[in-house]
Structure formats: C-alpha cells, structure tokens
Length: 262
Length: 168
Image 1 (cartoon, rainbow over the protein chains, first blue to last red):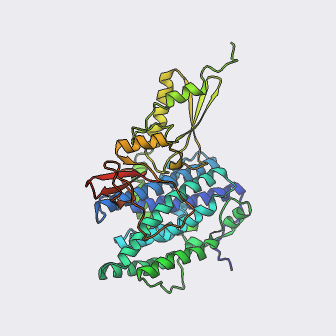
Image 2: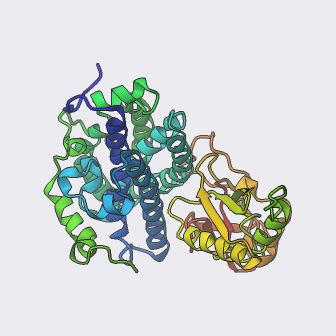
C-alpha cells in the first residue's frame, strides 16, 4: 500500500511543480546549513574540509532547485528570496534534515541515511520530463555518490571502532530512525507529478534504501532499530521547534538589512 | 547596414575563451575544463553557454565574469552567458593534453568517471599516481580537498602530499 502524507487541495499543475521543487530544494538547503555548522568544529582538519565541501554541494543543489522553483512560480522570487525570506511554516523539508547537528556520529548517520535516499532519488529523477530538473538530478547523482561513500566509510569506522564510537553511532541510529519514514511518504501532489513524468514516486525508493542501509548497518555491527511509528510533518510545514531557531540564525542578515549584498 | 556576415566568427571567439583560465586551476582554460559548452553568434550578440562543474562551486560566478570581461576586451559589446544543466559536467571532457598540464602543475589528473557501478563503501580505492615522482605508492587522505573538485593524497615514496582532480 502506498503511504500518504496529508494532501492539499487540487491546484494548477505549475503549483504542484513549485511545491515539489521546494521540497527538493529545502531538504538540501536545511541539511546543508546544518552541516555547515561543523565548519571549524570537526574532529580533524580533513573532516572539517570534507563536511564543509559536502555542505557546499548541498547548498549548491538547493540553489539550482530553488532557482528553478522561483522561475516556475514566476512571481519574482529568486533562490535568495526563497531561502532568506520564507518563514518556517513555508519550508517543505523533512524533519530529518532540520534536527540539530548532534555529535559527529549523529551527523554521520543522518548524512548516510539522507545521502543514500538522495542518490536513489537523483538516479530516478534523471528521467524527469522537466529537462532542467533532469539535468540538475544528473549533477546531484554524481555529487551524492561521493557523499554516500564519505558517510558510509565513517559508518563502518565508527560502528566497528571503539566501544565509545560504537555506542554513539548506535544511539544516533536509534534516535534518527523514526525520522527516515518521511523520506518515502508520497502524496497527491507527488502522484499527479508522477503521472506527468515530472516527479519520482518516493515510496518506490524505500526498498532499495533499506537494502543498502541495512547492509552497511550490518557490516558496522549496528542493530537496525525496531520502530513502528515514523515522525512526519515537514513536507506540509509542520516542523520541529529546531527549524525556527536555525532559520533565525540563517536569515537574520536579510531580515535586518533587506537586500544586503557582499 | 549590411548584416550578411556576423562581425565575429565562432573560431576566433573560442581562441579568446581559450585564454580565460579557471580561477582555482589556473593552468586550464574554461574551454579545456569543458565548462564552455557552446558559442553562438547572432548578429552582434554573442551567447556563451556554460555548465557548472559542482552545484556549489563558488568559482562559477568568477568564471562567468571573466568570460564576459575577456569578450568585452576583444570588442564584443553584447555578451550573454547562458547556464545549461544537461548533459551534466564530467571530468571525462578534459582532453589528454590538458590532463598533462594538470599533472605538471602538481595535480593528479582524474581517472575515468564511472557512475553506474555501485558506490564502494569501505573498500580501498585504486591508488592515484603521484604527480611529483610518479610513484603509485600513495594513500588517499580524503575525497574532499581545498576545492570541491579535488581529493587529498599523500605519496609514500617522496612524502609529498598532493591533490587529485577527482573523477566525476
């Protein structure tokens, strides 16, 4: 059975597309910003550089997706306007992306869960009927493969490392697992776009995701959590308290000095 | 006015663009890197199609500015830069002579990009040849380096850390 998130009323086709592009863009913008919080704080220099690079890829992907969303919407909003001048209620990212960065194990586990999902999504999205979106997906796929390898390598190192690294990773996986279900929730908006060959039915990505993720968890010696209830809400603007705090920091400059450039 | 022939030929414009160097890898031009995907001359307007390397590459804004500046300096007044996304940029577009320039500059050139193979998690990758001493006794330090497009390695033979332009 196809799981469904709460759906909004019927809307013109381009509104569906804008909504879909916001979901894709917001996941990457919010997660990219969270990852950028490690800059200057990572455990070793190489890792500081790696996390900042991955954050840059994600924010870059968000820039392309939000630019396309603004062009499709055709209401004069560019990527900056969408990133800096929307309130939390208008953000469409999954809850997984917005959780505070936690410790290094938490960040790695989240990156791994998201990157595998993003890789599968980008792979399928290369067939999108919207040519620019297909092109962005092709680029996303190439970059995300490096992200999967980076976080996957660390999953093995932490899970199969010291007692402490193992315990921290297990705890991170246990905490994050309930947020992974939302990645695969589809709804009427997405289904209408699937019919038009614009979007990917994300519920069809779940089996492949579980196979890859469970394989790495097994190899890391980490137990797959038995969680029945999955958190949801981000796709319809119902966020955790954490997003508002993050946006306050991310948006403060444009809110206090509208139009500022440097 | 007679407009039968465009004032600029595509060939001469490519010669101009071949002198526009990548700001991060100044031994390669934006043409050699495959960032320039096409040049169109329509009357007096010149449109240069470019494709970004990495989504978040901060150099792309500088590259676009440098392209416009070079063509202005050449006498083209009306320059448009158009960004295209498909096909996505790949290091496979960098020609052999440009790869040798990279190596001579101290950056190991990219191997072939393979995006269909499964991601090898926790597997040792094939060693990258040291651009300084040619040894294959090298270890990767990180897939991510000083810019989005480079990985960091260290050579066990000559002890030199070096960067690799990674395949994508």
